Length: 125
Image (tube, rainbow, N blue to C red; front, side, top):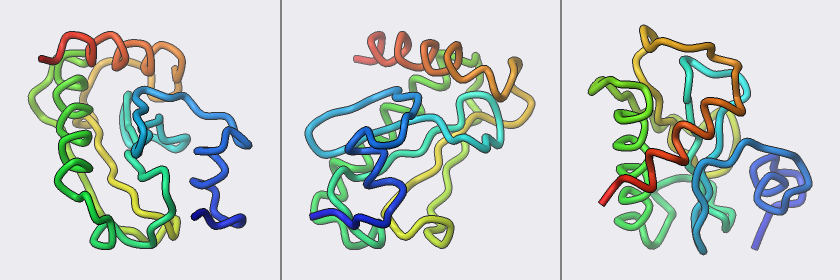
């Protein structure tokens, strides 16, 4: 089930373009359009849940978040990866994952940053 007014549901359905870094059957990770740092990624559920705490397979959700964080470490050469679960910006379960703000690179070079993360995901075992 999705919410026709939810921006993240529209991204899942490709009605709104995004810079995807990871996708599987249940989850989607894409670059935030107002990044805190280069590579700032939103990890969302494909199915609409209001809160992260409503997601029935939360363990799998956090495994995806871990995969993104590990890829960001490799892609941006830092161990300092932050994550936030707030939930008031968009009423759809989402987790921010982003390198520390001192990471080298342009925050808005979306194509390059997405590619760096995608390439690093392949290297994660």
